[in-house]
Length: 279
Image (cartoon, rainbow, N blue to C red; front, side):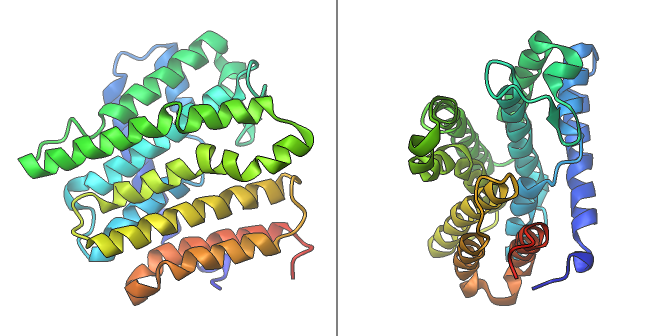
């Protein structure tokens, strides 16, 4: 495992992502106003940027860098959608959270009406982000396909149903449905992040299948780690096992998968460091 102090590329990658997010937010809301301010507040906080990190590091597997900035822009659009979902999750009619990322939630800071409008604004920006890039016919077809996947993540077959279950279930029934909620509410954004990295990257069908499987397994591990750190689970061993399952999907890529494996190590170290019962 990599020591957390040795994640030397994480700060530069996160800065790359934050610069892209700043550019997209500036272009979408040049007239300012409270909704635009709330959108920036929701996005430009202290997020880990795990989803766009997955995107750009998947794109790098083929050695092509950030081709036409598509992987970076697509990964940033996933982060925008994620931040929009957090605004909604935190509302008084949902989870009624007062603090997010060590500061007041968007509805506490700006009011419920502005928070809802900001969430709509972020979804719209995420959905159109790739349609504004010039490209060949084949490239634009890939962008539209990704946009379709993005919107499917949000619909009633994904995040919406996951949040609905999260609100409705409690006690033993909630525990029995935990895996289903993860598949609906958490996994889709992680798989979408991998799809963002697959754009224009020239992977074979077999490689794409392995990477999408990695995204799903990593997303499950991420939610399990969150549940552990929130005190909803008490054993780190299942998280470690799930992370190793995710790592197995990367074996065919050899040393090229270093960037993604580093994220597996990062989540492992974060989980085990914060959960002192695991040795």
